[in-house]
Length: 415
Image (cartoon, rainbow, N blue to C red; front, side):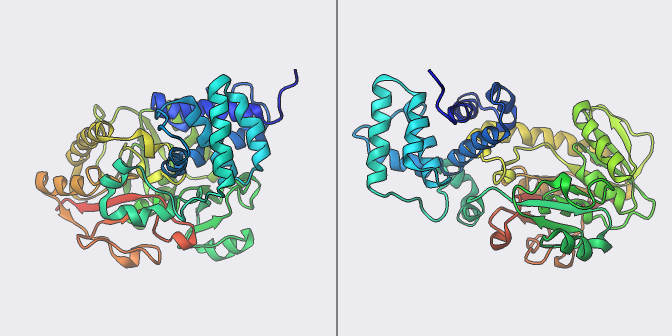
């Protein structure tokens, strides 16, 4: 019997969700296995879109499903996961209900199939709708406290595409030529789905892809004027490129050869230079001293929830605790390498206080470093430093302009 058109994309989406929700994998990690046998780029994109919408709106989909069943389905029951997918298509992707039923029910059999059909049909007849913004999982909302309500509007849609320019002086000319919107010097934002490799300046290496928030930490070191900087945990390399473009002599250190290959490719394309150091930062001994150290530390990456909504469901106290220990070990090493006058930038793409504000407080309690407050003049319009002089961004900021990733950034100098 011929396969229903589009069923392979739905099967792949189901595999993606199973990998995230049951095994704790990232969407990226699950991609290769889930997409095996899905040859059409359009079907691959659809599978990712279905899975992404489920993960963004899962709390709201579950509330709808529970409103149409006498007894709540188990959290990991296959009919619940398939119903989430069906609702994501109908309520978020605009798929006609008959197409949702034709492709969704084929993932089930017997009683679960009849159950899913009945629940979905009931909800469609009720003309149910989602809230204006996603409802965060309760445990996530509790962790993010006062920020939670502000963050949620930034999670409605996947993010647009941000580029960082090698030459900031070209910002107006290039952003206008691309038909994009610039939110800061050296930045342009393009519509989601833009084929970046076809954009002007790609072959000549005039820019690289980097979220607006991620562009800020290296900018806070200013012009290098031939001074030395260490980009610690550097790959995939956006911050290395930024530092090199600002005139720093950069040593880019990372433990992952695969990720460093991507950095080498980008250095070659942009014509920028950096010393590549493949090493474990915890056992590395630098041969020379640095004028600046940028530690964009490994973290839970909950700040990337706009583009990686799996973090809303994978990350909890255990992962946060593990990451804070790694971060403190790396901070210890970075401070060991600081000479008088060396500046330290500590950054994480996390929304967790334990990885951001609490780490900054720990740095000041543990080491003899002087805080160098971040100023509004150093930041894109619409962003402000905290009262302590740190930076906290989150997806709900600049939401009317497409938002940005969640970051924490602090800056210190050794006197």
